[in-house]
Image 1 (cartoon, rainbow, N blue to C red):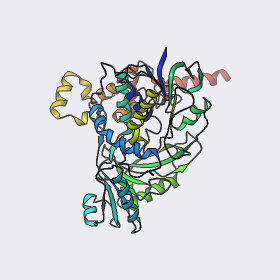
Image 2 (spheres, rainbow, N blue to C red; image 1 turned 120 degrees about the vertical axis):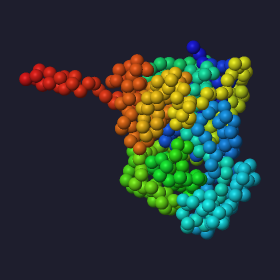
Image 3 (cartoon, rainbow, N blue to C red; image 1 turned 60 degrees about the horizontal axis):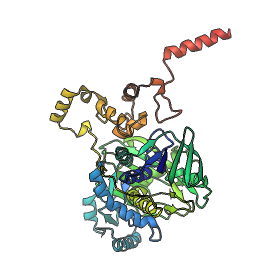
Image 4 (cartoon, rainbow, N blue to C red; image 1 turned 90 degrees about the vertical axis):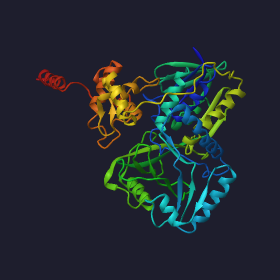
Length: 490
C-alpha cells in the first residue's frame, strides 16, 4: 500500500498532525520507534499551556504559541483530555525585574495575549497564591495559561485519529529513507512503508531523519531537565509559578498537576547522549533550591519521584516547520517549549503545506472529531459505582490503592484504539504506579492483566518495550536450570 501521508514520530506533535489529517479523505500512517506513543519528550514534560508572551517576536514559535493556546478550548471539548486554565505568575524577586515583566505585558497585549496583568500589590499577590514567597516584589499574571496532561493529550489525539482511519505502527524505528519517482520508501527495523508525502516529527531524532534525505541544515541539541515530584495534596498551589526567565530557559518553576501533585523543575543542561535520562545529586539540588526561592515551604520530605526529560533544542532556537527541497517532505523539528502549547497550530501549518503540495484535502463525510471521555473510578459517584459493579465486577476490583484505579480502567486502556502494550503504557493512561508506592503494590496485578488481555506470557510483559522485560521466568525453573548447568559441568 502507498499511503498519502506518512508521519514519523508519535509524540504530541506527530499525534496532533495525525488527528488533524484524519478529517480528510486520505490515507495516513504514523510510525513510532517505541512500544508506546508519547514515550519521549511528551512523557517527561511540564504540562504547561503557555500564554504566549515569552518567546522573542523574531521567532515563529511566538505566534504559534498564542494561536495554539486559543485552539485548546475547542480541542478540550472534542477530545476530553485533562486540561484547566488556572493562570500563571512570572515572579519578580528584585525591583529591577519589574521592568522586564512590564515589557512582557506590553508586547504580549499587543500580540493578542488576553488578560495580562502586572500586579505589584503584595497583599493581593499572596491572596491569589498564599504559598508564594513573601519576598515577592511583583508578578505578571497570565490568566489564559493552563495545565494539561501531555501524555493523556497525546493518547486522546491518537485514539481519535485511529477512530478516523489513521494507522499507527509502533516498534518501527526508521533506519533508511529513499525518495524515488515521488514515492518515499521508509525502511524500519521491521518493515517497509511507502508514501507520497512524508512528515518528520521525530523529536530528538529529527535531524537524523532529515539527513537520510540529504537535508543537513539543522542540528538538534538534547537539553536535559530534571524534576522532583511531591506526593499529592501535601501542598496546594493555585497558580503556575515561573521565576523571571533567563536567556537559556524559563527557569525552574513550581507547578501543580491536574492530579493533585506539585513538582519543581526543570533545570537545563545541554548534553550529547540522546538516551540520557539520569538524574544527579547536583541537578536535583539545583532544582530544589530554585523551587524554594518561589515556594519556601515545599514539602521536601514528601518527594515520591525524581525524573528527567530531554528537550529537542534546534541550533536556531526556533521551531523548524519547512516545506523542504525534497518534494513532499516536511520537516517539523526542534519543537522545544512552547511546543506542547503550539501543537494544534503546528498541525494547521502542516495542513497548509500539504495543500500547497496539491494533496486532495476533502473532508470525510463521516469524520468524527469527538473522543469519548475515559471513565475513571475516582470520578464516579457512589451510585454510579454501584451500578457499574452490578453489571461488571471488574469495576469493583481496585488494582492501584494509591490512585484508586479499578481493573476495568486498565482493561479499557489496553483495548483503546491505540491501546497500552506495556506496564508504562498502562501507567500513563490510567495512573496505576503513579502514587506514593510507585507501583510497589499494583505492578504484579497490572502485569497479570496485560498478560491475560494481550494473550502473552508474563515473560513477554515489559516495562516500556524491548529489553525491559520485568520477569525472566519462574524462580523454580531458573534455579533448576542453574543446578542442571552445574551438574553438566561436573
